[in-house]
Length: 382
Image (cartoon, rainbow, N blue to C red):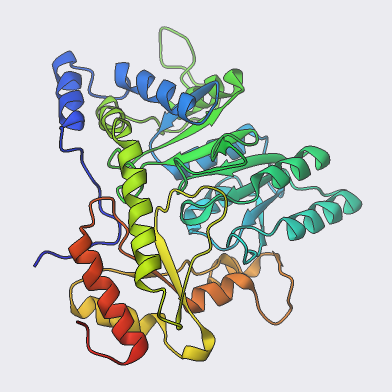
């Protein structure tokens, strides 16, 4: 039996991706730019209710240039979700900024708005206000972006809507990526749609986007020779990768519906298992990954269940290890409601991500549900 992966790429059966890549080859626009890059940027802007977009080599590159556009200078503070992947906060260090990590809240598992407000109020009082807030919509579920947007507007802090896991999700009738100064998207191989690797910035400030495209193409000045007046980066997405992305956008709605069905089958399958709780739904998630937690009283551990799944060649993964617990990042400031623990630490200790791909068959999912249930009840998988 083939291995069941956590979130593998899912190419359209109609072959849109191959068709568009063939068109790119036929035009001889391979890299770095071309018609599919322009089209991809336009379609992403429409999807996220923005005026424009910049297709880049990764979501990390997008965060980096967003921070640079916000005027981040050495020593400037950037508030960030702690319960996230390191790619969110690595770019803060690229620009020699100071990460300030904020714990999650249980309602959405995302950054706690009350703690954000506390950090912003303290920043105003001290005269050392943060330059930006990186608000992650974790596992495809929106953070409380309306409130975070209001807080950032009030305190004059740039909001970066970090929607790398949340393409197609929404809250309060607005898509993730549409809030704040910039929205950040990712098209890594495990995301809702993929370009094999890549990312994008979307924004309403077209002048800022033009500058970002300039930086992303090595900051080459408009001169007949190679001239550079600013530091540049090799961050643009290739026309071939953009062609794949345009093909994937053709089937985005199907991918979203499929992942929603996966989440609901898990919810139904584990309904009678007291040891298991599903990740709470907040806003309109895209269900990029379906994540479960094990109740403390059950004494079931993610490690035990992951081992049982691995024995059947099924991939699973622990919930993100929070930045404040990481060897490199633990030295930076951290806001939590408790001095003795944190929401992120609790979710990391009890959480497990299950296979959630849009091509996951019902038969394979039934097998996963049976194995996980057996681990929690002591029975044999049926």
